[in-house]
Image (cartoon, rainbow, N blue to C red):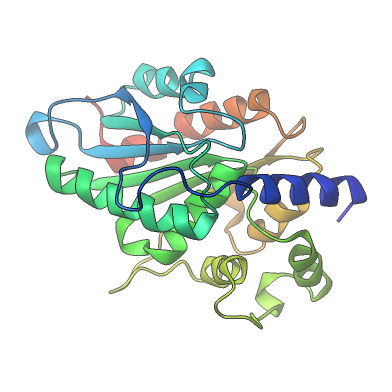
Length: 253
């Protein structure tokens, strides 16, 4: 990994865990309802789409960059919930546990048939962690420039020839668990969790995404131009929504 990428990734990962939790362990994660109907099934939304922001961004960032209006313009039948985990002091394993709990609660209340996780940067890493730990809850993942792995681990995996040639040495290590799960993406009882990846070729953190891409089908990976920034993620998100995958999964209103 390029020295600049190493510094950026280390700063992001350390910054994400720099503060202790400020919410009680049983408190719901803070967030913002970007779109919501009264319930699931015939009377409400079929899908729940959960947005996870990166370090330093809040839930409103997804609305500011048009992620919600992109969905509404395509008529996708979904409730939209953006998590705001700034200051909560959560590393990815803790975020995954609490997010899974909140998704279960929301599904029990509204009867969603499908749940999609959409994350950018550290939020993309959080989406992958949650899917690896609770794949039975997730029907699809869109990870845009995900950040979740120790740069030295990424370098080691790539030195060994990529994910298919690598095997985890620390089964309880969070990042190794995610990389190991990405190789099969299995749900309990059968089937796979579809994972879609987008990132920019000039992103200093691209080696993380390139390592994730080793495990995915070519049609589920899009490489754009630019760096580690919202304008890149917005364009990648618009392309993903236009592909029709969410419409097929969630239906249209």
